Picture 1 (tube, rainbow, N blue to C red):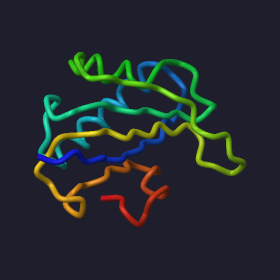
Picture 2: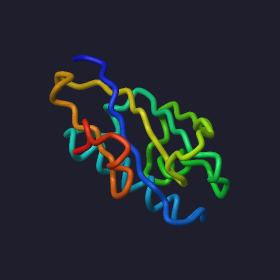
Picture 3: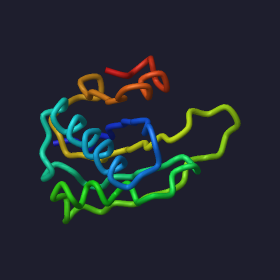
Length: 120
C-alpha cells in the first residue's frame, strides 16, 4: 500500500456557506469515487480557499460527509492578481494501490482551466 496525493479544485459561483458545502462535498465525493477510494483510505486533507471566500471553512463539508476521524486543515490561497476567484483546492493524502499515473486529479467546472494538463 502506497501513500499518494490527490489534487482537486472547484470554483464557487458565490460566497455562501450552503453553496460552499455543496461544491466542496461534490469535489470530495468525486475525488473518492474517481479513484476508487473510501473515507477510510484518507490520511489527511489540505483545503485552500482564495481570499475572497469568507462564508465557511471548506473542511466543514468533509465533516458533514461523515469524514470525522481524518485530520483536516484549511489555509488561504495566495492573493495573486488575475487568479481565478472563489476557488477551493484540496490535496488529499491517501493510502492506495494506485500508481502515480493511475491517480485521477479532479478539477470540476471552470476550475478545470487551472490544470488542463492533469484535469480529468
